[in-house]
Length: 349
Image (cartoon, rainbow, N blue to C red; front, side, top):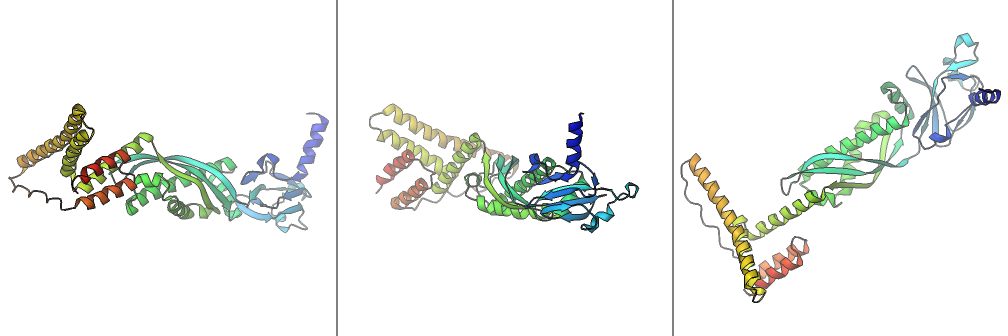
């Protein structure tokens, strides 16, 4: 090392401040523990400097330029090393920013979440960002020293894990308690409610370290495209069956509509027959499944009286037209499906 490097190094030891490369960090630890008396320490307007020894905060300094001398900073007397004749004290110095840090990104898998509408377990992801602020610098530093997390990256990594953990728990709990359809959650319909729950759920985990989540932004819950398609299809089937009064009625209705659509195409006998047979095939499939279940139950227990025939559909064609219009407006029926069913019901008027 040359003489100019030595002079430069000595000059740095006489001035202590947050490094320029760490201006965007929540916490910065000054690399030297041995500090000379009368050293100049600079604290920025949005931070505090904490002096820590043996895991205990001995004192702190607010914004401004300070000359480290026991005459104007009494707590330094507790840090002086006697063998140096009072010219040196030993302390860890932490600079902690107290401003709000926005745009901290996080994300990861939530795991399989059961959709209340279909009963399927669907793999779910969450990603977004949040803003964080230090509310108690002393708690933060003592907690970090105790856990050995003295760096900004370690702090943020730990905090992101806490956010993901609470988000996972809260979303699963809300789906069960509120019975929110998973497709509504992924569409963003309940984003504000989830954010409120997550911020509230984080408090007991981070308050003890003097931290708080101020707000969350660009928050999104997502699932795979193929899972989204599956949920939409099953949701449509469930809506159909409810409208028809049950799965058997739904299958029979599909067979009738298939035949009607074939005739409506005008002269395309092959196509009409294919649609009719397709609808009948669905009805036969449900019938065979029901027959198999009845046989299994008959083998396991004594015969029971045959179930009563399902009640006749007493709804008027006008009422059924209104119901399929509501399904179309809700996005359950496509324009093509709606027009076909409407044409069939119009014949009954």
